[in-house]
Image (cartoon, rainbow, N blue to C red; front, side, top):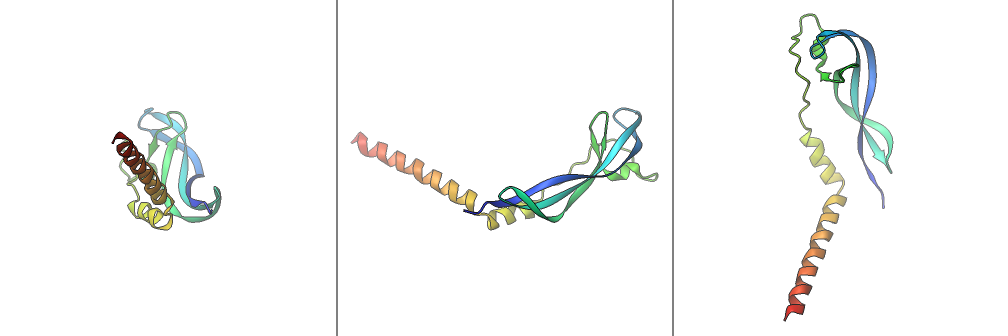
Length: 122
């Protein structure tokens, strides 16, 4: 059996100082890039693409969109919310039928158990 899938890795890009909206003070930050890697037997082999970037305050650990660092950008103080990647979800289901097979086996076993109980009740 071959076990494959994907894993996201956070890669630190840069560090510096910024005005944290949550702390309301000048704080250290790190800029992080999230990259999705193809895995084979739980070993990351090669990158599949960049999922996004964010800024993380090193004191309060809150995450913000990267435009918080730009002078003209809006400093709203709202954490960044990355939308769920449905395309990737469906790709995993198509490329990795193991969850569907396992779900089918479980449902078959449950159904077999129910038939067996019904048969012994007679």
